[in-house]
Length: 228
Image 1: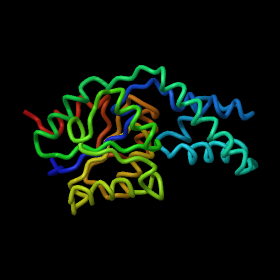
Image 2: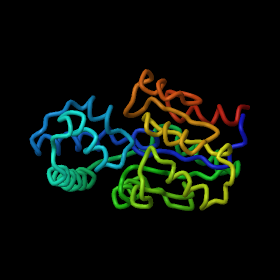
Image 3: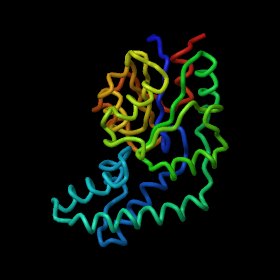
Image 4: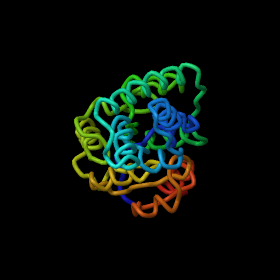
């Protein structure tokens, strides 16, 4: 097993169970904007991405590039408003075993970082709802607001490596529920990429990205990294 020093985890669908509310909200914003897109297509094209980019890619695919930037921005602003309303009432929880996994990793001197295609405000709302503290349950939170180029760019992982003085990407693990998460990890040359089946993409979709491992959930990861 590789000598992992930094573990970077996606949030919604990977560590945090929020019942796909983000992508259901993207779907709703698109419908309000005049575009009916099945949730499966929203997940296929938008999962893991910075959310304006997700909306842009969905509309470009569904409408063959015929939607104006102004219309996309209108839908994105609608999405942000709707998501704020949804999160104010949403009950969220970590997936089973996630907090225990974080504890195992940190007790073995592995830094735990959350990264996400959300903006900082949305991500911090989730973290606060979970009762997690930066420096306690996790070591850092890196969001779409912290980088110029979103996933699948390696920029968020590069930033985490720099923050914790990790020089070799071979010592970094990236885990997520979408193809974009795996592509991000590969673009960063991570030593391990882990797909989980708790969120946006199916095993068949994740296999195409060729991760190191595909697990049913993150609870299994502790046993993989630290077998007794």
